[in-house]
Image 1 (cartoon, rainbow, N blue to C red):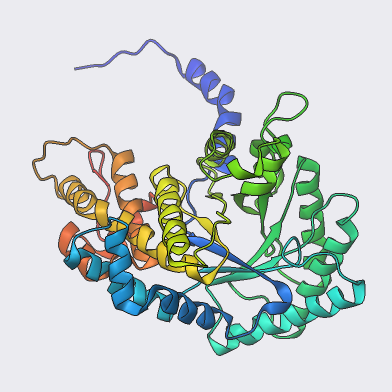
Image 2 (cartoon, rainbow, N blue to C red):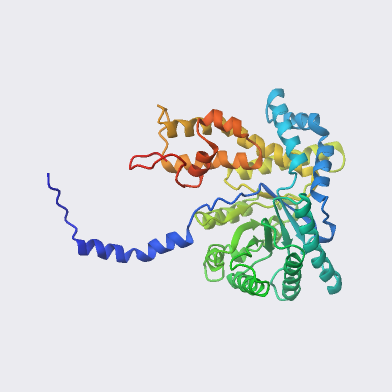
Length: 432
């Protein structure tokens, strides 16, 4: 039976031409997840306090603060994370994490945590930071992601920030090269022009040190309302991603600078303030589809002092961690070793709470098992991404995932990243 269509070849060609710019925009500006691991947290320490043993020291301090594995199990119970069996399971996983990889992402801070010091002192610290980072990498004690936060590009600190960045990169190159997990943090960004200036600085540093083009990437700290809404009514947080020439790796919300800039009283500055939620909602929409990560900020209520204060601070931190995970923000900041127990307990509980249902739905989707839920490809990717993230941080094990999903880890990863599934030919009606 012959099929007749009304649209001519010329008309179809006209549509193709009209949408060519849209196709290019979607392919270049919204490439999707590139498969990079996103750390569950970032830890900041003054730059001159870093040593090759710092991560292990934080892990031991965190375990001591919680009272060891038994203390972690008790804390999990106090936080309502499960019955004794489940709490013990969480405690075992978290104790192993604190021993093997207590810090996933570490920033040697030359900004607020370091302060204003004589130039000669900061010069020496920047050079030492490069050497110490490479020493930690060589010794196998560095976190998977590590780098510096230098001073911002506002006029009073711009030259100092650039000089520290310059010296640090030069020191890395001279002492062994740039580590794979290098991260650079540009704080207190207010305009797209500052991001463009950082792109230029990266280009010049790459040329000076014979580095591959695009090797230097950076994250942007959103600490000013000017990035959420500019004077002309635009949203610079979205624009800077595309002005960053592919170098912007993540956006980090800065709880206290942002809150203070809105004149929110100190007692009410928090990650869960409505003003914070509004800013993060804007950022979440801005990064969607771009492959750029998003991080929540920190709480400065630390679990130190008398037992009652420690208990309250742990409960607050665990609640805030769970809160941003439920809202689709998978990273935050930690400021003290005693925050690590609740960071990982709350994070692991989040993934383990949702694992059984996610695994069953993914299994049913891939194998076309009859189910009361009719999931679509986009939902299957979300289910796989959830499991993929849980595996990356240690909340889930390969054996658990294999048993529950009845597919390989490679297949889970491929579905999560919308890539061809290994050993699974794609057909028109294929589910993956």
